[in-house]
Amino acid sequence: MKILHTSDWHLGKNIFGKKLIDEQAVFFEKTFFTLIKEIKPDILLITGDITDKPNPDFETLKLFSEILFWLSKENVPCIFILGNHDSKRITLFKEFLKQNQIFMIDNLFYFKNPLEWKDEKGEKVYFYVLPYLHLYELKENIEIFWKNEKKNLSDFFAKKLQLLLRDLIELLLELIRDTIKKPAIALGHFAIEKGIFTGEEISFKFMGMEEVFPLELFENFDYLFLGHLHRLQKLFSKVFYSGSILPYSFEESVYEKGVWLFEIKNGLLIKYEPIYLSPSFQMKIIKGYFKDLINSPKDEAYIKVILKDKEPVLNPLERLKTVFPNLLILEYEDKKTETLPFGGNFTEEIFLENKKLELNEKELFKKFYKYIEEKEVEEKLFEVFKKCLKELNENLEGVKQWR
Ligand SMILES: [Mn+2]
Picture 1 (spheres, rainbow, N blue to C red):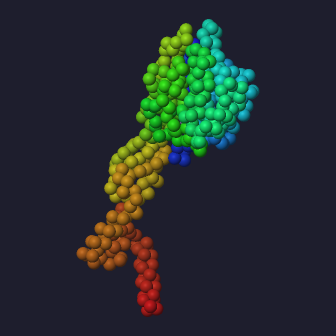
Picture 2 (picture 1 turned 135 degrees about the horizontal axis):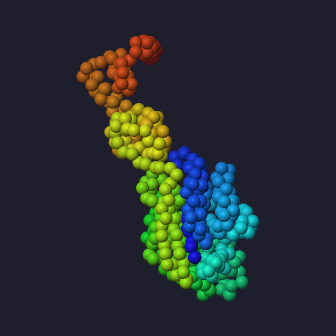
Picture 3 (picture 1 turned 60 degrees about the vertical axis):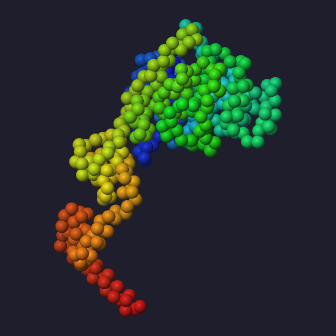
């Protein structure tokens, strides 16, 4: 049985104000769909964070519906589960989609009754599906789906002063412990100990699942295919994160993106292979002095510039955009430079120098203008300055007399 595992699509994601929806559409059309046609998986798993926001905009929903349409047209069975960025808005049509073997999972039904999946050769697995839910939803779900259990749930809840996510997860695992069918594959959206965070895994919901669970909690499962951590990784010998499908931060863009291809034979995972996919856009961090960067060759990638200059540069973002049209963010290497008001050092220097040279205001202005504009002030402009200076001095005189 061939299983393709992907996660954290974050459809509709913006980075520093740049919408990525077009790039995401290109990626699915050119890269992702081609891969699916090539691999022909028996099932495709998407373990949460399908959209970037719980209330996705129209463009995002449109792209998502196009992806769903393609998958159903190509008869690719899939399991989608909710992540911490998703909401039930995207599972609204789940009953229709189920008829095309697209399972959109937003409750614990398939955690209690695992989703049995069989391929043409009779190979069989059981998916225990644990979507990301609010703490109260999780509690509600346990009460609904296990209401006929012998164990007294209300006793359990009454005993707890404060309900923690960890308690509910432990309870859930306890509730299904004796009924687990093999091979048992858990699908979820949470962090496991030793997992590498990228810093992109921020929670959109109040009760964040920022808890990191020990592996031993899940010892009854044979494999865990998970979402949430954005780097593609394998932990211990049975936990797999496919990571985000595209690079979503500058710092992470150096790591390869992709999906996991699993092969199950006689109930065992006989193959796990990361398939790396090239993103539909490039992200780069460029570090250097302004004078060098402004003379570098044109680069269309999404860029973050880190300026090494010790002195603040005038309008660096706008000026560097002539070289890097997709420059999204600019920082100074020395954080102190960033907070200096522009010309902070300059004015101080000039002030001290002026004390020595006793420059008058007119000469001082000429010097300042040359520093900023890198050319001599034109006569016309200088006349305007002189006029303003005269008015200012007259006003100051007026104030003095009035006092
Ligand atoms: Mn995510």
